[in-house]
Length: 403
Image (cartoon, rainbow, N blue to C red; front, side, top):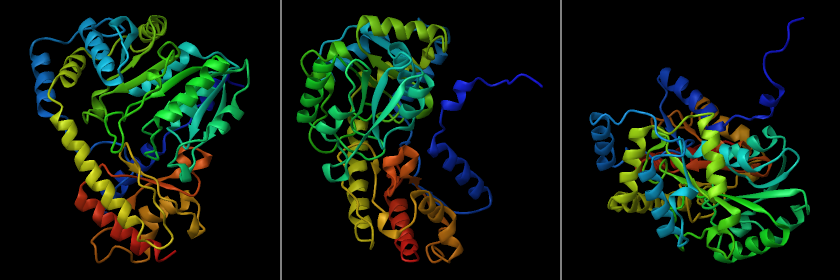
């Protein structure tokens, strides 16, 4: 009998629902179907032209080679200055690691700090990578339910109940949050910090949507006394600057965590692309008017989408304060989130829905793509045009009337 090829640990990794649906949408479009895409977390605009110009110039200037694994010195300095400015906490370049996208920063940060057998608390519903990487590392995942009635925040007493003294190693935070758009408050951060000090916990803080917030200002756990030393904060260029395919992220922590992540970068990715770092540095330094304009447009779309979704019988939709997602509650229809995802994409059109709209489907994501506590919800991204989102809601109103 032949020896098995794939290591057992690979089976502990999960996929990501957005890319599964992306493949289905591509196949439907090849068949000539018209689909409004609300499943993918990708801004519907190009990166700002000055950033593109900076990348082109870098390439033309021969900026093609390897960089230090932790990133170019000038890039790390600029990120440190940007984090210092935006978080109000002092960083220097030695505490920064540049990564080829934000997702590798999640993987490398956990790989650098988590041992097999450690418990890691993470939000549910939450970004799928958290619940995938934790067991891959031999650690124990402990999902923390997000509560719709609290604006998809969590209760501090529920968080404390999940902590096992001496075994719980880390809490993963994500604010603004994917998939719900929920935002943690300053009071939340104070309570979390107290628990971290009491139980000697680390924090990984995913702040990739930090510049896409519509209510009060962004609050980071690193702003709490003594928490910078316990925290790896992650941010990047994908969402803020519409640079998803450029693959550029960064993490700030202590010198020790930055060195560990740099060593892991050396042994995995070597480095982030040199010209991308040059362009990304320019993005952080330039006039931020394109970011502000994009945020204002997202808010316009969000407000319309929430208002109109709430006019559909059977749907309730919380108005989120950050990111570019809404997470409507669809439990009243008696169907699973997976069934509703498939119905909106293909099944509704088979019942004649969308014929007068010239539309064959709307792609959304099942809430369970983000964990068991996402059951009964679907995620819609409003990173699409205002007009397409209007069309999508009209289609959904007609479709849900058939359920």
